[in-house]
Image (cartoon, rainbow, N blue to C red; front, side, top):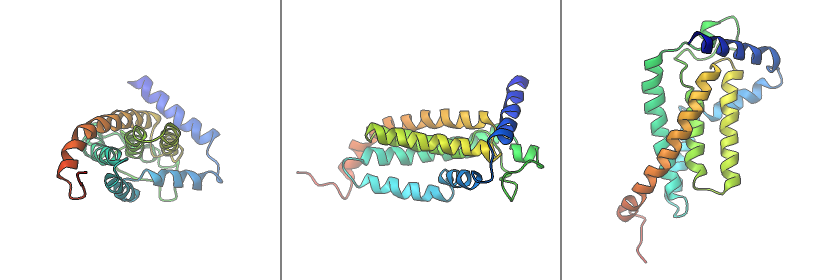
Length: 192
C-alpha cells in the first residue's frame, strides 16, 4: 500500500510541477464543473428525464438516471465514508491551485470522475459511436482536471473511472430490463 501511496503522491506533484499553468487553470476549473453532481448534476438529471420521453433514447435516459443514483449511493455515501482518504489539498495545504484551497470532504473515489464516466458509459451505449467516444473523452478530461486542481490523487480518479464505467454499463443493462415495464405503464405511451 505504501508503494501505491508513494506513486500517487509523486504523480500528483509531477502534474503540479510540469503541467499546471495559469492559462490552463480556468479551463480545468470549467472541466471539473461539468462533473459536479450537486450543481451541474441537476442539468444532467433533467437531460436524462427528457431522454425518457423520446422513443429512441428512452433506455439511455433511464440508464443515465440509474448511473447517477449509483454514483451518489456507492461513491459519495458509501465508499468515501468507508475509505475516509484525505484529499491532497487537505494533506498538503500549502500546495493549492484553487483560490479557496479546494473541497475538504473525503477523496476516494473521485465523485466527479465516477459521475462523468457513469453518465458517459450509460449514454454511450445508446448513441452513435463517435458521440459515445466524445462523451468518454469529456469524462477523461473531467477526471484529469481533478488531479490538475490538486483535489484528487490519481488512484482516486482511476477508481472513479473504473467504477463509473462498470456502473454505467450495469445501468444500461438494468434499463433494458426496465424499459418494457415502464413503457407499458407510462402516460405518454400509445399503442398503435
